[in-house]
Image 1: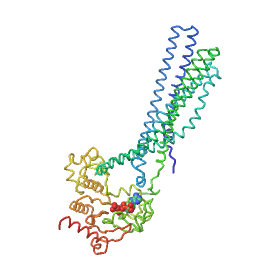
Image 2 (image 1 turned 90 degrees about the vertical axis):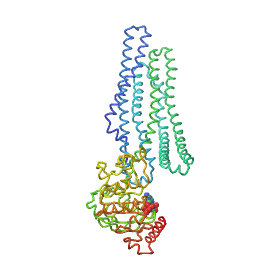
Image 3 (image 1 turned 180 degrees about the vertical axis):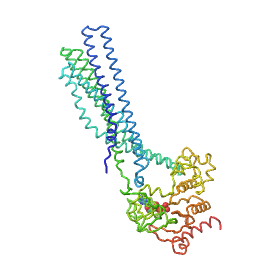
Length: 585
Ligand SMILES: Nc1ncnc2c1ncn2[C@@H]1O[C@H](COP(=O)(O)OP(=O)(O)OP(=O)(O)O)[C@@H](O)[C@H]1O
């Protein structure tokens, strides 16, 4: 697994901007560090009785120049790093999204959407903060402290006095080493609990209709409350530690200042140093206290963002389960039918096979019907055909090629899959139908809608094909959703069409019309129909009956009915009886 170095790579590719930001901040702080020296010298001039109007004007001009230079250079540095931080945020979100789209279904079956959102939102923001604030403030603080110390050393203040005064500051690296890892580990816990809360919120919103129908709002509120409490506990633990850390650093600065005033004051009274020296020394030490506070702040932010960065980096390390063979090329004969031989498959975390010893042939242009109890392996078979999960090598061929040897894009481009729960996006009906090619003219969209028997319904919507669905639009009924999803599958006009229980929510008359349209529209194309209702697949050239992952019966509708002891005939009898009962015969 390749180690991810998101931030390091970003800094490397933008190093010139960082150097610019650091340089301008450095120069700004060096300029700023002249401030106490100028004031000290002014005090000595004042005390020596050499003050004149011209001298005051000179000092005023110098102080003004320092202020203006600091403002311009410091502002430029700040702007540059802020911009870099935002750029990092956007490019990382794009990178994460690209990565998400490459991950396999098995990853999504183990990780909730809320958790993934948390990476994109909370963690990326936390890293951006450390880039924007961290780099600028650290440069500011370090340069200010260093230049204060250098300026002190270059002044006529005795070195031993400076040494004694800054003694408490020398403990800072040690304090950082002790607190740093602890803050990071507590931050990681906060980020993890934030991810849990986002996940819980996402689930609660998603299931709000069920919650309301079952009137279990108090239970759901309590469950959500638990995740919030967990964040609060973790946050409080972090805040306690961070505050203590942030207080200790300036305390060390204040200690230095106290020593300066006490010891420096004593030396001034004794005449060992001038009053100007004392003023400069006090101002220098005062100047150091603020940056120390900033450093505390930055280290806190950095430790927090390091925890987030580790999370994002480890997510980027996750490799998709389904990878292409090195020489994978396009499918040469996508219309060439399907062959499955000796296919046995178990899901990654399951010991029991979902499919066992499956062998079948679908000749080009033919229709295969698959029927079987719930959980018998029908969808699994389709997922393997699409390589959403990988079948063992040498078991599944399309157009005579092992699907593990062809490119994923080519394989999936040549298959139109209409799943049981066709997801619709919050956009127009037209965009939902023309999902695989949004540049399509209206005519093919209308044709697909007609084939899926949803055309008349769409004409009744306020903006017809331009009607928006979802949050800001209309809500479709279950059957309408299913038929819109069907139209999306039809419009692709792929060599292989798979309908996975895709007409279960429509009435018998509409189902018959859809199946008829399908037969006429896809005369020479291969089709797989999975259904629970025999009426949806009885016209198929071959029907297989799955039971506990095995093919237990196969043949045409007629052949299967003739086996009176078989599951198919039993199913047919039950369904026929149901229809007769419903029709009151
Ligand atoms: N991602 C998964 N991980 C582990 N087991 C799974 C996964 N998806 C399905 N299964 C299991 O595999 C078996 C077959 O499931 P599959 O979805 O193929 O059944 P199905 O025949 O399509 O059922 P239905 O008619 O209800 O849609 C079931 O026992 C199911 O619990």
